[in-house]
Length: 333
Ligand code: COA
Picture 1 (tube, rainbow, N blue to C red):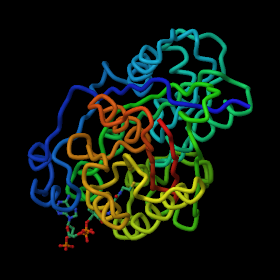
Picture 2 (cartoon, helix red, strand yellow):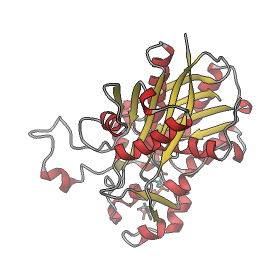
Picture 3 (cartoon, helix red, strand yellow):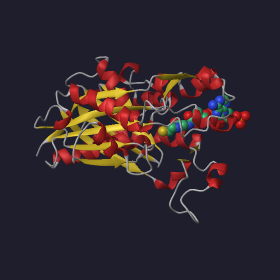
C-alpha cells in the first residue's frame, strides 16, 4: 500500500494590504490593542472583480503543481477546504476544477473551519493510501473580509481575519522515510455557537434567508473570544502530543511546528507549553491575520520557501477552530 507525501506547495494572497492603522479609521480600535491581543499588524483583503476564492485557490494550486513537477492534467482529485465559498452551493471544489481546466475529476469540499486544511489533508492521505488516487490537490482558500462587521460593534472579530489561499499536491510514494506519518482529527460540537455564522440556514421558520437576519446580525461572525482562547490552548498541545505519541516521538524530535495562525498569543502559549524554541514555530499571522483554512498551507509554503523545511525534517501541523474542531498531522519531509 502506498503512502502519501507533499510533493509541491504554493500560496496566494491578494494585493491589498489592510493595516491596523487602516482599521483605526473605520472602527474604534488601535494598532496597540490589536498587536498586544493578537500579534497582527496587517492582513490582505481581496479585490472585487479580480479575486475570488476559486481564483485565489487556482493561483496557489498552479504554483504547487509546478513545484511538484507536474501539469494540471496530472491531478486526479481535488479537495478544497473553505468556510467562505464563492456560492452557497456548489462548493468551490468544482469552481477550482473549472479554473484549472480539468475535466471530470472528482472535487470534494471540506467545511471544517480553521481545521479544514488538516481535515482535507487527512482525507487525501486516506485516498492515496487506499490506492484510489496518485496526485491530489489539497487546498485551503478564504475570502473572509466580506463576512466581517467592520464597525466598532464587530471589532473583536473584524481585526483578526484576512483573505488568502494555500495549496499542496499530495502524491503517492513507496518511501517509508519521506511521507505523511499520521493525521489526527477531533471535534466537540457542544461549542458550535462559540464561533459561528448563524445564517443563512435551512432550519428557519420560512425561507433560509430573510431581511431580519441582516438586522439581527445573524449573517456575521459571532465569537466568544475567551472560550475560543481557553479551549485552543488546551487542544493544541494535546493534539500535537497525540501525533508525537502515535509515532514514538517527543517534542525534541520536532523540526518545525506549523500551527494554524489563530492568534500569536495562542501560538506563543503552545510553543512555551511544548518547550519549543522560537525558531521551531512558524508565525506569519503578523502579516496575514487569521486566514482560517488557508493559514496552514500559506505558513507551510512560506517556511518551505525560506528554507525552513528540509528533507528528513519532522514537521508537525496543528489546528484549532470553530466547531470546535482540532487536528494535527505529522510529516517526515
Ligand atoms: N479594539 C479595541 N478594543 C477592543 C477590540 C478591538 N478590536 N475588541 C474588543 N475590544 C475591547 C472590548 O470591548 C473590551 O472592552 P471593555 O473592557 O470596555 O468591555 C476589551 O477590549 C476587552 O475585551 P475582551 O473580549 O475581554 O478582550 P480579550 O483580552 O479577551 O481579547 C480576543 C479578545 C478576541 C483577542 C481574545 O479573546 C482572543 O484572542 N480569543 C481567541 C480568538 C481566536 O483565536 N479566534 C480564532 C480562532 S480560530
